[in-house]
Length: 583
Image (cartoon, rainbow, N blue to C red; front, top):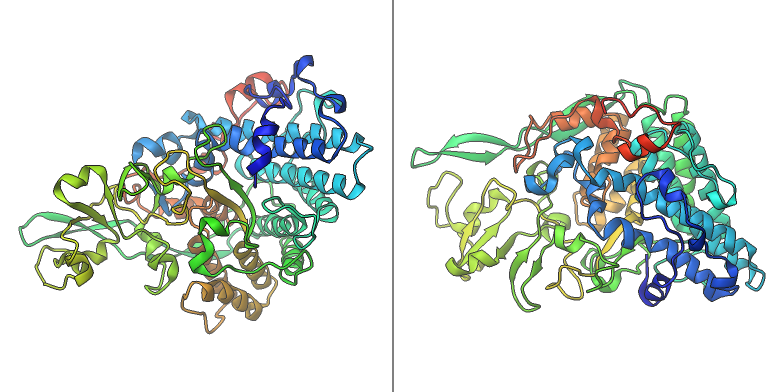
């Protein structure tokens, strides 16, 4: 989302009074909060205000207090961090985590605002029809994406076609998963026809467009397709317990990171998707992904890896739908840079003051070829915290680099094989089996001011690489392994990864594509939903053996498949009598 010049102006308008809790509560607007065309106006500027006001929900509601991306990211098999940060959510006790409430109220706040915006924009008579339609298409996209978040997290949820001021009921029952998806795909298909293509001169960089909607349609249909595949469908994941115990030269026990091994899991039934036709869903996923690939909605291409995560490259075509914050702006900020990268005391300092907590595990890191840019440059290998300055300390990652970084092997034997680049620094290099040493991504490092807690960041919800992998997945599931391999390799080639040379079986290709998604889309809020839609969430989480690299509790049961509906909603809505299973 490209806020930039409009965001502060739009912030002056109170579109709705919807900052309370509970889906139904926030729909109960006070009369004085109602804004009509006579207050906002009837012009392109007025349209922009409505649109920007809806977009601003992402920053001024969902991301600014760090509930997002926590609700998307902290519960998966390849992510870890400090126990105090992961808390109830990271340990699977969802009912005790306040972040879950924002996963419910945030999207519903946005949906309500989008419904109001659509109604008022449609009433305007002094605005070019194409301009109005594009804005309505953007609002439909935002609604559809919000429902996509909700249905994956909570299963059946209430659906609001319009706002309560326009006759919608305050309280509504939950609609089936199938019904919600039908509304999602309907809205996205309509938005494709309404929005500008990316190459249209009227398109505004940073906004969603027709290609964004087509790409999201492919992802939605692939989600439906995989979730509705028969129980027992096989897929492999490289995983396992994080450590084994060995004895060093002093006779002390040391923890050595284990190499993950392939575990073949059989898919569980995914509740709510059993009535869908997986092949029909995958055919539609392929149809929409191919239209994006063929350039029907403008040219999309993979960025050069050396530029992909540069702050000056955020408007590149690869970023099809992303949230962008404003540097130094507390109201329109995210915790992305702080949580994934950390911030320094000053712009010239190398020492992290705080942050840099959320990272990937060794099981994830070991998925890569050593020459893959996504670990060569996409993972932080050395870094320093402020408390290390007094003794010239420096952390390193991965553990297997100990010999070349320190000159000592994992068992404490001096080998003298320290590489010159590390020897020249004079630092005391350290590695520990705690949250201080994880595979920290560099995706969010490049910001305008690395010394502020409120740095600008670009958090992608949909990238072109995702669409290519969805197309590969759809082609594999519909029987074309050769084409699947071609598009899988397209993503790998960009990162200098080893290319697949033979297709193997449908099962092995399926496993390779899921693994590629884990590598390519790490720390972008996808992994949890990928293993859930494939019906292997419980198997993948429990294969870790209870605790991950930094001792976060990872055992899961059936109740963890869905988030609990917030108690505030259960108490307010007479149509929702019971919560999701186990809550």
